[in-house]
Image 1 (tube, rainbow, N blue to C red):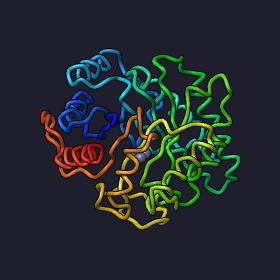
Image 2: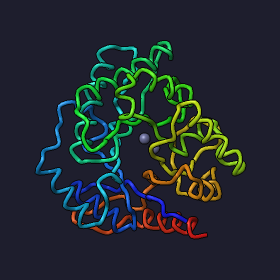
Image 3: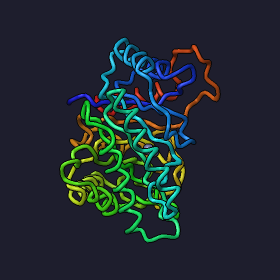
Image 4: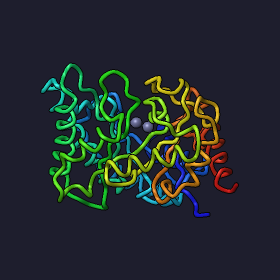
Length: 300
Ligand SMILES: [Zn+2]
Ligand SMILES: [Zn+2]
């Protein structure tokens, strides 16, 4: 059994190096970060080399590879928006996300494509693809860092709930830039969007193969989350693994499937701590428990 690259998205109180230390303390080999406050566009925020160097030092000390780091883009970047000023600002924000992610030497930055609003979904997909292209054209390729679409739970007119939509967005990127982009799958979002990853191992396999066939490639990362809400609810509320509507068993199948090999597998499950002391390097107890649970699935 080959090991899996399991990670968490820890609190970053006290700075990004503290998040790295908390991930390592949870027993993780990977982690996800925000490089700027996720409720802002941050289209002018750069990651200074001295700040990046501190993150690299923390990663080296923790024994976590740079390409096991994922960056999650700001939630407010609605690159699909039919309102032009909003879409343009989101596009600028996405390019900066990729720039900051590249400075870190991270695996990639994932983003939610946003909502088509009152507009045509086809046109929205084109706008998302153009935003990816804009980011790739404005940030030189270094360290193979990629910009990655995250599938969504499908609430309202949000884009990215199906493999077909993701493929349509990726198809807007010119072939010579295509290797610098891709997508990842969040298990809670899949389940909430009505994809069967839970009824049987065969159903899960068929689902993963469907995404690979339609998009032309395997996912570049997975987010491992159980769901607080039932199947096909379109509600994006994460639960601890085995404590939601998906249940533990589908995660055991997923971790033992070749699809989860060699890519970051990031938990975005609820934390136990309500507040985090800035200089506290210990892991959130729930994160440590989840990593141990998943490791157990692999050993079994
Ligand atoms: Zn996300
Ligand atoms: Zn996610």
